[in-house]
Image (cartoon, rainbow, N blue to C red; front, side):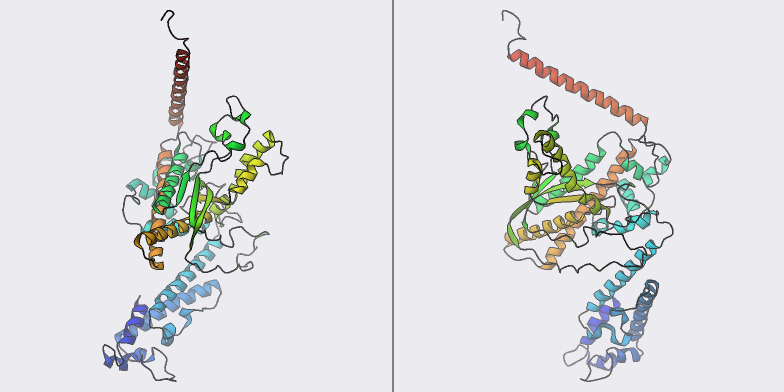
Length: 495
C-alpha cells in the first residue's frame, strides 16, 4: 500500500500544474528526455524520510521474494525483480501495488504447495485438505452478519475449526466412542461421524438446505428453475410396470430418475477449465517434475443474452471420508469434488439402463429409449459441495451465470448497462451468501449427528419407524373403510 501511495502521489506534486513545485528537486520525477537518471534516484539520494522508508519497504519485499525463489529453485522475475531505483517501471497510476501483491501471493502459494508436497507425513490433514480450498471455501469469512449469512456460536466454532483444520469442538468429549456403524469410532475431526449411516435424515436436511439456497439465488437472478423434476421418463416406461404390483414399486423407480434441478439460462455457461478431465497416464514420479503445460485459459468476457437454454442438474454433498478424500495417495491433492462430479453422468445412465434392458430387451452396451431421452435433454450439470465448502466446476459455472443473469435483469429494470465492477460485486455477493450456506449446513449437520450416536438413538429411531408404520396402517384402514362405505357394504341393513 505504501509503494502504491507514493507512486500515485509524488509524481503529481511537481511540474507546471503540480501542487508543490519545490518537491521536483526532491522527487526527481520530472526528468529531461534521454536522461540516464533512474525513476526514483533523486528521491532515494535526497535523504528524506519518504525516500528512506521507500527503500526499506522495497528491500523487505524483495528479500521475501528472493527467499521464496531460492526455496523454489527459480530465478526472481516480474515486478519484484526491478531495482529500487526503477520501481514500477515509470508507472504513475498505482498499478504497481496490485502487480506486487499478485506476485507476492503467487510465490507464497507455490512455497506452501511445495512444502505440503514434501511433507514427511502425506496423510496429515493439511496435506490433502488445503489443495481442495477454492474461492467458495473462503468467501464466508468476508461476509457481514445478515439473515442470509448468520451463524450461531456453535455453528461458527465448527466452521472455523474445519477451515483451520483443527479438531472439532463438539466431538472432543466423544473421541474413541463407537458411532454404531461398522465398528467405527468417533475421531477428533468428526469425519467418521459425518460418514456413518445414522438414524434420522441429517444428510437429506443438508442436501435440501443447499438445494433451497440455489433455488433462492436462481429466483433472485430471474433464472428459470424447477426443483425435483418428476416425470421426465414416465411416458416411455411401459404402463404395465407402473401399476400396483408391477415391477417398479416406488415413485422414484417409476420415474426412472429424478434430477434435483432444471435450470434455464439466457446466458451461455462458460467452458470448463482445460484440466477438468485429467489426462491419461501416470502422474510425474518426482514432485518437482512438471507435466506438459495446459493451454492458457481464455480471458473472461461478459456473457451476452440469448435464447433460454435449459439444463438438468444433480446435486451431491460429500464428506471428508477416506473414500471421497483419499489420504497419502497419488490423487490425494486432486480436486475431489470434480472427481465425484465426473461420476454422476454414468450413475444417471446406470439407473436407466436396467429398465431398458428389462422392459425393452436392450442388449448390454446398447443405448435404449430411456438413455436416449436422457442424452437428448442436453448437458447434465454436476453440482458437488465438498466438506470444506468447495464446489465443483459446474457449480462454479452456474454461480457465475446466475450473477450474469442478475446483471441482465438489473440492466433491464434500470434501463442502463451495468459496469464490470458492478457485475463483480454481484458475483462476490452470490459467493458470500452461498459459501455461508454451504458452511452453515455442513456444520449444522455435524452438530445434529453428534446427538444421534449410540444405542439410544437407534432405539429412538426404531420406535419412530414403528409409529410411522402404525400411522400408515391406520391410514390404509381408513381408506379401505371409506371405500367400502361408498360402495354400500358398510351400512346397516335396512337403512
